[in-house]
View 1 (cartoon, rainbow, N blue to C red):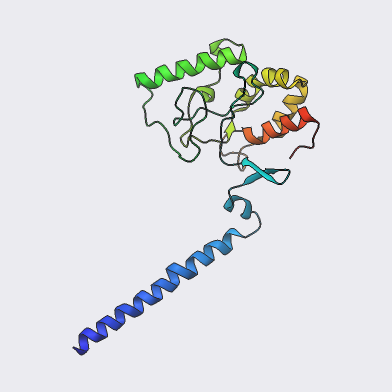
View 2 (view 1 turned 45 degrees about the horizontal axis):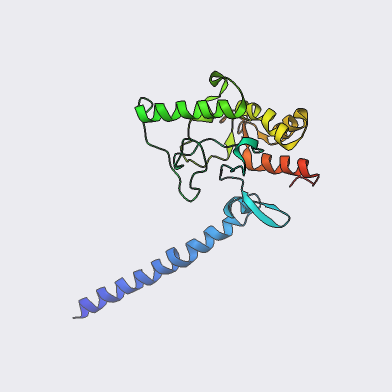
Length: 208
């Protein structure tokens, strides 16, 4: 009986200690680290605000939808595997790729559809469409596109927003990040920040 009571008490003590460590101290420590300068924005989702209101996240790409597809003023993100159509807005609450191999007939057909649709939208030959414009990212919510894909969209965005192409190209450059530590990854253009900058230029407001 004494042995059972001792074992029970030992188990209760372990439970209490682990509850304090794992259930209280560890979450508090994680929260405290996320408050450090340079980490706070990422911990809060890197929210981009305009006039005090959230306009989106700098880390989550959501493809903008034009009110009139024939007069599309937006830069577009990479395709999302969660979209119901080859192009179009996916579900930003989910993340993931299609899990289809490069030789999958369905994926090949989808890529070809995307290539033809983007070529029509931008008024170019299908061969001029960059690879990242027709292939979904692994996450499906990539916030950035390649500089060549951004450059392809410049004439249309400039025309629909009634802005000089040179100005739009400068905005693209301003919103392009380089390689991490000068060697990691590839340069990328943040689509949300770029669209906000274009919108600000078109309306004469300060850029966010």
